[in-house]
Image 1 (cartoon, rainbow, N blue to C red):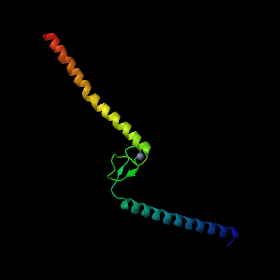
Image 2 (image 1 turned 180 degrees about the vertical axis):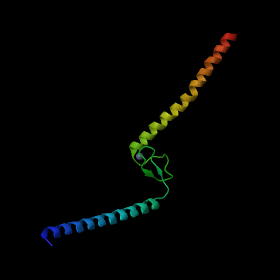
Image 3 (image 1 turned 120 degrees about the horizontal axis):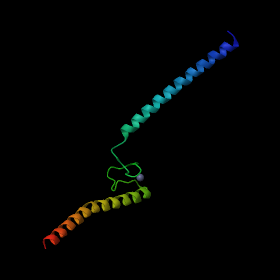
Image 4 (image 1 turned 90 degrees about the vertical axis):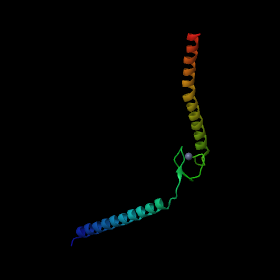
Length: 105
Ligand SMILES: [Zn+2]
């Protein structure tokens, strides 16, 4: 066997070993991940950054003050939208109603 052949064989063996080691490592990692996901208890997510938070957290934001502020702004704009959603039709109805009174009176 020539020097070249021996080197080639060694290189192949080493590559094979590396592949095996990588496979083993991946499998261990996968098992580890599966275990972690199973051990995760029930939780909800921060409605701003989606970080996992305890289930009974209220409001649904993490401890990050930035998230709390964002959530507060979002909540107030949502309330404003709800008010407008009722207020505008009410005004429209009122205008129609007043016009009706004006026409009849
Ligand atoms: Zn957050």
